[in-house]
Length: 134
Image (cartoon, rainbow, N blue to C red; front, side, top):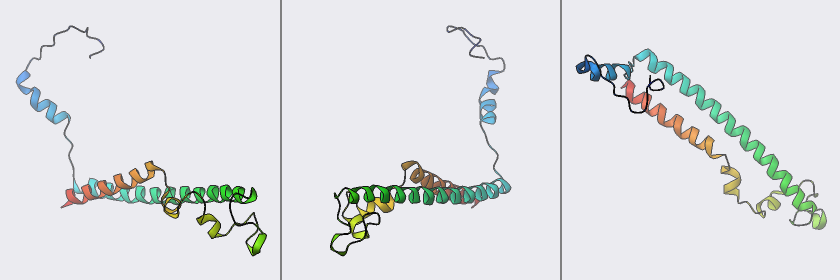
């Protein structure tokens, strides 16, 4: 409707005393127990998918980090080469990983922010559904 009207248009509502009720009715949602059960199941599915994505991303990050550390060891910029009984350059020890630039906290928790937000969103929605069921 607004696309068809000019900028300076005036709208007159016939039966304007019903306008409040019509707006409330148009923007209202009816929630029943079956809908809440379905929402709970959907949130459980979503939670599993988020956890799977998080694990997949964490594994990708570990592989990429391992590749980065291997390259640093090969260039002699990180301990862990084959000298002094250390592991070969293509397989640095965890000690080599620990001495790299990224701390273990970052390695363990380095998951993209959108996944963390997804986890928070799912947890919030589950609490909301449980509240509505009560």
